[in-house]
Length: 91
Figure 1: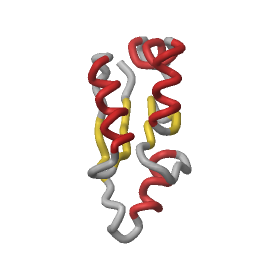
Figure 2: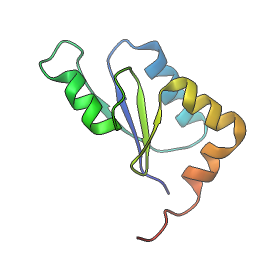
Figure 3: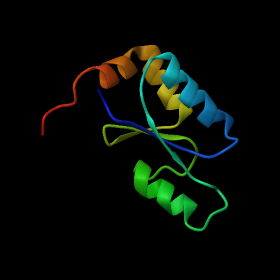
């Protein structure tokens, strides 16, 4: 199984949508909750997500894929299932 991380903030509807999509697909994820009002929040988000500055940011096996729209497109194309259900490459 792939390691999926969702960088999210409270009260973010796109964050809620991304997490709901992952749950519907049975994909486990770790959530990193970042308060938009804390010092350095955007810096922590950028560091963890490969440069993203909007919420949510989703990372699959260390590969930043972007936000909710990108996640939804991966799901529609079938790529999300391929990336999360197949074993991670040995390395």
